[in-house]
Amino acid sequence: MVGSNGSAPVTVAEVLEARAEQVAQQWADLPIFRNVYTTGRDAAVDAAHRLVEVLAEVARNERLDDSSAPGFDRVRPHLGQMVAARSQAGSTLAQITNEVSQLKAPVVGVVEQEVADRGDDGAAPLDAVELMGTLRVVVMEIALSEGAEVIDRQRQQLLELSTPVIKLWDRVVAVPLIGTMDSARTQVVMETLLQAIVDQNAAVAILDITGVPMVDTVVAQYLLKTAMAVRLMGAECVISGIRPQIAQTIVQLGIDLGDITTRATLADALARALEKSGVTVVGEV
Amino acid sequence: MSAESGAERIPVLRLGDVLIAAIQQELTDQSALALQQDLTEMAAAGARGVIIEISGVEIIDSFLARILSEIAAATSMLAGRTVIAGMRPSVAITLVEMGLSLRGLRTARSLEDALSILGHSGPQAGR
Amino acid sequence: MSPDDVTRVHIGSDVQIAGARQAVREAAVAAGFSLVEQTKIVTAASELARNTLVHGGGGYMDLAVEDGPRGQGIHLTFTDEGPGIKDVSAALSDGYTTGNGLGLGLGGARRLVQDFTIDSTPGGGTTVTAVSWSRAGQRARR
Image (cartoon, rainbow over all chains, first blue to last red; front, side, top):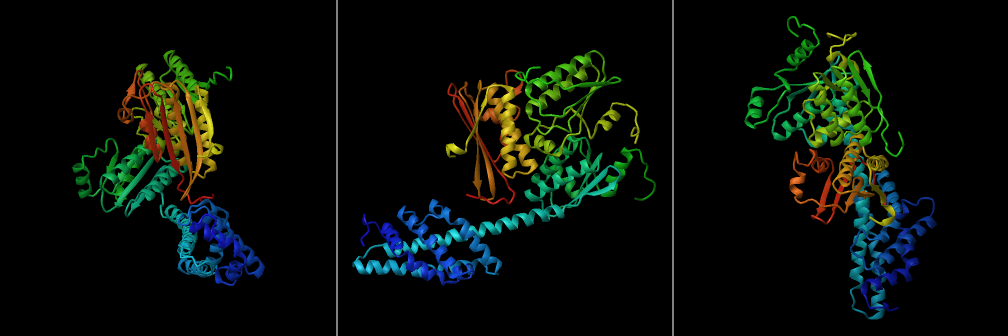
């Protein structure tokens, strides 16, 4: 067998096509196939065949180093299922990619054999190594995107759970801002607070920043935006927990809080909210 | 109104000297202009307050925002006040993101609160 | 974008601006956008569609859904053969208006989406592209 146009990738493709059965049989016994296709060896061999065909196609299109080569699309769902099965069985990402690496030897083996038979010094074996490396990248991408999705969902749930909006009084809600305000968190806090204004028919929303260590322009912008949104919805926004240093920083930054009411403590903010609704506070709150 | 013109007129109710318009559907530009015309005419004919209830509105873009501002300006010139009631959170967030804060427009949480602001007595008045 | 996946909405009247909003809303819902994400992109589309009509003399919107690493994205292109925009950066700045006090709405739209480009030359029409991605953990399926 000689590569029809002398190109090394095409040689790899031709070897894979001609020796598909041999490679598939070897693969079927390797952990990544054996532990996934537990119903029977035939299923493993069929699955292995499919993957060999795809690799041959990718090699034939000379996309050896391209993990986004369209050929891989055909097996992405199957690789996804294999990755899912292995992770559920407790394999880590490192273990899974190691198992994928084991698929390399049989492929490189048959290509080297072919090259030796032809007395050819060509680059085909190296190209085979590169192709198998790309397969490893494809599997890693699949595993990572699965993982990332789970983390994303969990993070979102955590953000929502950890943003308590408190009903302080009839028509008065408050939310304590705690810790660093990254953009994901600020978005969740704003949305949660505004929804609480609807749910509680709130007339006053208190943003308590006692737990915010530092107010810079980003945080100040966020407070302004939240206050504007609260106002648009027809409620009053009060910012409480303004320590003297924070007040100074805000002035120094040249930030104009406009008509947003501010108070030093949450208690003061509540007193203010109650005054607005005609309730007099007697003694200490 | 023909479907072509898309100008389905939003009904305007009169409660004493307050006009109330509740927008329950997406407005085409023509409908918004028609509402502006109706409210301005009716206000000129004698109303000291206008309430535009928007809890059913999912999108406010700069065009609609401008119309609302113009209605407020017109009623203010006629010695009245306009109150926008019931804005949805997603709409408020989007307006703020765009940089449209609609300063000068009174807002209220609900139709009831808006009536309170305009001095109409009811169970919630004076609370 | 392959031609098969693009929806074209003609923008020649205010009713069609509403139609463009509807098309974008449906696509955003199908792409798993949160309510706030939907509102932002539909509002941006409304601004840009109106700009196409009022300043561009009419044109069309092309809508495509794309797969991204963290979810799907909505890709919008607004095209008109109108007079073009002389000073694009001025048009994008806050408070920019021409003629009857109606802002071009471009600055606001830009703030609502993730990727935004304008291609416009005086006398040569205008093309505006706006793209937003869902941040929900919806897996990209090819």
